[in-house]
Length: 362
Image 1: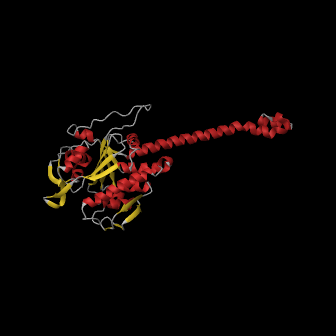
Image 2: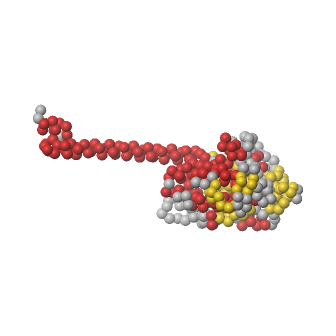
Image 3: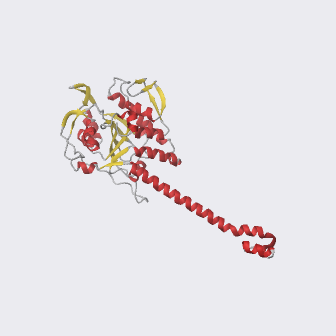
């Protein structure tokens, strides 16, 4: 066999004689491109599969409660809103006014919540309650905190186990969640305010701490020293960058500030909400997919919503509709209250101021 024939068998380009080596590389080039193409295709398949897994994982994180189904029509009327702006987008983002009940619960389920102060596994209470009314156009909002020590008339609520709870007069506001969960919390707030809650959002202790950590912490300025052994928080007055555990302690502290009532704590919670809005705005989440996923995972893992928001698609749609809302566009207030005549450690709604506030949000 001649050298010429040997090259011909190897590469079928041996007829190039002295350029046989070059001819062999050119002959193999389609094979290399094919291998690269298969590798790229495999990477794309894996990427799509990973994206699909991530979507399902985040979607499965969310717990949904059918509040509309449980409460039926015995509720305040929905606000009449203008239709969403039309355009090239087949599914334009909603722009109408919106009212949400946002609760922070001291859930006692799970090791993380217990370690963060959730107590035993006997139940949970609404540790924080905020009615958030987003104005039409979704560039401004009013956040109204309801002191958990407020004495209210708790309406009859359906139980998940069947049958209703009894009407209770002069009981603490946060007992509604304790006896009837999210459904009773919503019904009690609607009874107190006369305002329809379009959606319900609840975050537990561990979920809040994870969200703050995923965002890289949060910067808050306190006006006075805080020394609270109950919440394990000791901060000098000034500006502090807090991790999730410390931010949660700040949200829960009450004995180390002011008169030790819930009103002082509410002021700190409202500062935290605005600080978190600023942190989200400057976190660059859209340019950092890994960080975006960590934040989304932290958010959804500790989240309970009504069934209108219990999917990643609906939450994403809500988030996108609020992109124009910054901390500067959020007004924070507390429901006007006075000391309860029956108990100096409790408060009741101050009238007519409280009624006028709720009327402004309808």
